[in-house]
Length: 292
Length: 292
Image 1 (cartoon, rainbow over the protein chains, first blue to last red):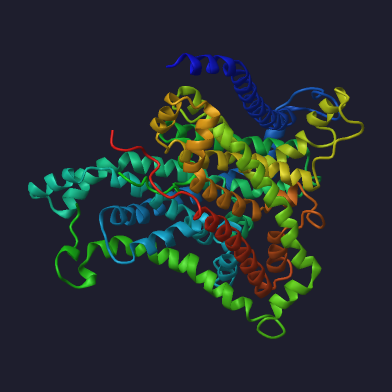
Image 2 (cartoon, rainbow over the protein chains, first blue to last red):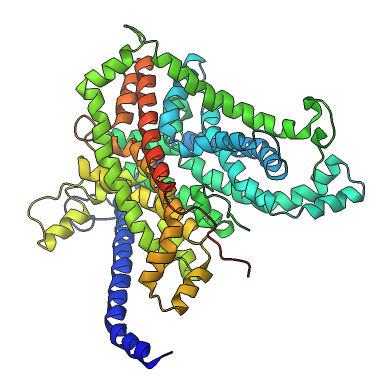
């Protein structure tokens, strides 16, 4: 390093460092502000759900848990929970059952129109649910499927299935084909190969896909809202109706219901985060790394 | 590899690949493509008037065509804020560390909570008697109640809260895909972090940014529950999805609703095409270093 460039760097180092620090502080500050507000939003709902009476003061007059019992009865949360579980279970099972074989074929095979098919599977993830939900709901009303459990499951499967395919395809691509060839050499049939080689290898990927689909289906509002009837609402849709009709019911019981919903989603999110990276939640829309 | 008949000459119905892909493809065709085509045809068969009556109606009724502008006014600023803030934050968190995992998980939570819960939380937190308003008055920043709900700002804030994590995770997945060796090479040549970003990371990130912008815009443009719960759904935040919903489920004019959904899809498509077209002008190539 020459003396000149060294002294030049020394001269510039201080302001550049200061600017860098200020910039870092701005970003950290901005994010802290954002997250603190999110935290306070949640805390304010939680406080209200436990508060006896709360009006124009920092904290409620006293604390109680009876809003939770009220909300559970008023919004028939037991039946809403059962419906939610049924829908989520059915969607997960169907999405895995239909999605994993398709992902396998897409990962391992080359055929004409493969890119077209990939595009077709990507579309429901790129287009927002409300755009395709309205035509879908229209068709379902005509076929008398709207309002039924089947209808809601079909609607929720629509984004879940491509999502499983998109998570599983790169996962299957990175499994060494030699393992399958070796099983073949030892005379494994398709069924044996599937049962003893593929299923154990695919399990981690399927677990990740399952958890992500659970989280996404619980919080999928638009499609369920457009296709559900009074007896087929999931938790998030009945929360919407409660918020929409605010004033009819006590604010605190709506808050209690919101907390119930939040506990359910965040629990699943935290379970999912143990196995997958958060970026997978958004979907694997990034292109495959090129050039290697 | 599971063997299919495509290695050998044979009929398509003996091909295992076909049977692996068929159920998923059939499902997407029936539940996604068919309703879209059906909606398109339905939109040209209005309840009264000629083939184009719905579209003529939409573009002559200010209550309908103005929803495009209303939605744009929400979606564009929200997308710009989200992408603009997400870039530096994702760049800061690009290196793998326990800190990165924790920060991304916290940032992800608003994404999983969903718009309905955020709306309920914002109603209580940003409401006239909420903590935010109380704090602002306590600090004497603003006189009188702070109105951040039931208007434009409420919807914009909720679009940032739910949209930012989405964009952040997308951009993070693109940034972590860029080989850090490239930045380090620039650093050894004397580039400071800002110049590394400006000359190395940013050009490589542009395609990903375009994709993130497009996806984020499409999400924001289809804003629905928060526009109703947090906005003024009859006035300043009467977005296009509300118009489509009203047409379908309040006036039972499925034909007009389909037309509005198609217009919504077309506007989204045009913006995405513009952004991705712009992206073509930029660098396209590997984001990884050479062999090494």
